[in-house]
Image (cartoon, rainbow, N blue to C red; front, side, top):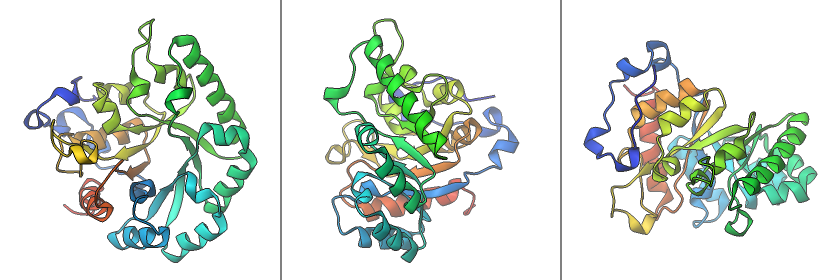
Length: 284
């Protein structure tokens, strides 16, 4: 049985306590992600060079990174750096417009880097729809791209924020039209919670289609405003013990630590790794 519905965004931290034995099976509690130690290197984008970023996250203990647009310009060089620091790149973020205009180039980069799942993470505000018909059209474009890349051996998924959770005129949400019937989902749990939605309910609803999660935390209201209101894992308000178990039950096999705007990415990466080791069972 999954945890009960509750709105994480409005729940005081002291209330976000779950008896996992009550809501999650013992079998799930003993499971872990196939790759719990992945880092979205976009989190370090303000602190070049990339070689130093990779060195630092590898030293902290991450075993994989998630790539983004700037890293596809010279994939062979990037692959050399990954090999140098014994890192893999199982997932990568790709703009939908980039895939539609240069699909072969981006698939070639993905193959060189060893990316298995190509993920669309964002739509610029000007390209977002405002009604059901518009979001269905975007969903159709994503579905077409899913079929094209899956034929080539890649997985394909969508990554949410908060704007794709907005209600439309018929009561549906944009993400329902984005995901359609078969699209995989990389769930950014914290963005989902920030939108006022209950991550547990969405994990139940899309059970078996959540391929990975983004791992970060929400600060208390009014805190960390210079970091977009995010917190390092373990210092925010999200009940990650329960969320971790629910994500595994929903099918997630990769956890990607990410912070949208850290003042110090090494601090964030270090604290995220400390929490991930506990969640993954490496530290009792």
